[in-house]
Image 1 (cartoon, helix red, strand yellow):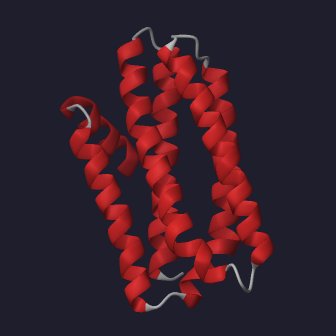
Image 2 (tube, rainbow, N blue to C red; image 1 turned 180 degrees about the vertical axis):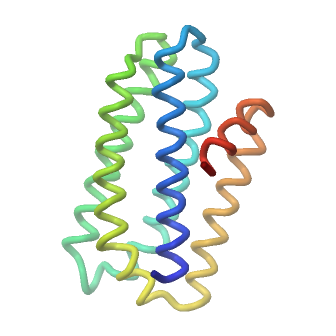
Amino acid sequence: MNAIATRLTRDHEELDALLTCLVQDAEAPSACALEASWDLFERRLIHHMEAEERFLLPLVEASNGAEVARTRTEHIQIRDMIAELGLAIELHAVRASDIRKLSDLLREHAKHEDEALYQLAGDKASVAVGHDILDSLKAALHAVVTSATPNRADAARGRART
């Protein structure tokens, strides 16, 4: 596995850990915990997809148009679902089962990207583009974590690394 695939796969694992936190928070009585977890998760996920769309997809679009089209379509579905869930969370009307549906969709999406897209992109990426992708993900993670509340940021970082 190349460095890009390794980092993006790890990002998927960290997002999955944050999803686990969301499900736990959705089942807990504290709406504040859920809102904080959601905020962190949503921003991480959006930054992750933006990095893929900006750097990875253009690398493989000419030779693997169907893979890129599938990824773009799934990203639209994911954005639609997170918009709906975000509103439900704000209205205190979200159910853990709704978050599990998002989790299922994201796991399937991540599996596809891990198996097909990342290796293709890593093979085509120059060293400079590889560094741009990694730097973009690191900057997104730093911006999201440092803007989160300290206790939730520490908890989410800890959960995301386990």
